[in-house]
Amino acid sequence: MAVVGMGIVLVMGGCATAGAPLKSGTGSPSIPAGTSAHPSGAASAAPASPTPAPTPTPPATDLMAYAATMDGNVVPVDATAGRAEAPIPADLRPEAIAITPDGRTAYVADAFAATVTPIDLTTGVAGAAISITATPNSGISAIAISPSGATAYVAVVVAAQATGVVVPIDLATGVPEVGIPVGSDPVHIAITPDGSTAYVVDYGDGTITPIALASGTVLPKILVGGNPVDVAITPDGHAAYVMDGLDAGAVIPIALAADPARDVVGSAISAVSGEAEAIAITPDGSRAVLVGGTGASLVSLPSGAQLGTTISGSFTCVAISPDGATALLGFFDGTGGTKGVLPVKLSGGASGAPIILAGEPAAIAIRP
Image 1: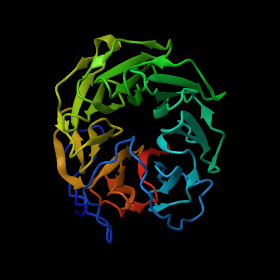
Image 2: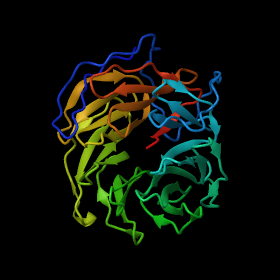
Image 3: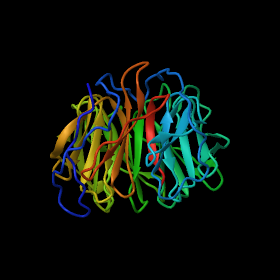
């Protein structure tokens, strides 16, 4: 099925309104709807196409993203120029990626081995991997960096155990700290804008585990039900939105209080097309982009009303540019098929031509 337009417009600080429909880029390859790739799925093999040498210091005006792909690489993507640069070998199976607030370093988490690899984004060179645990058959499913840039938090899925662990890493020293027990099968971490609390998505038991980061204290779990796969927090820190992978991709709002024990779970407000994968919120907090196994859509917050039509395709991840103008959607159309990043304008422009990658993108991070 070909990519179709999605009518959207970004109004900074204002109410959501529908805009002119987006148009697919000229000559864009079709992205058929297909089986969505679960974060724990196997990598899809595809021959690497020739790519230009990486740009050591990209222009500050370029929208630079970094896609962690299932073939063991991190691929710099110049979304302004519409091209992928030379892959940077990272891990056996990159699963998650986060960039420091100063934009200098990316940290890549491995799903098959509990390691985190730093990448110097000014040189494109990967550093020595940081080992998180010696537990056999464990791996990392998520990573988040504190707003101060001092600490990374990684979710470790420990084989044959009912609970997962969140491990802080001191980024100044690269030394992991004592792990914090959370729920079953943690798959995502989001940190409040003030850096006070981390919210951990526990896929296995349908809960969100808040952690008070100053003390490392686990706070009472928040029951959302189903199998949550992702969470995003609004820039003002007043709300979190959880994507449920079980209930047809329902989005569940949580009103956040100063005391996480007083957080309130609301009723589902929206749904994504196909198996739910990820959610990202625009910088003004007025909209969210939802991606799943058969489509991507833009919704208004807090109502959850869909704006425009769904983009058809099998999407795995999403990131939104710091200025709120562009969403980058990771896509995958089946084993051996096309994989890459689809740029989508959020302010009445056209969707760009897909940027083709050799490996399936598991996660995308955009340089601040």
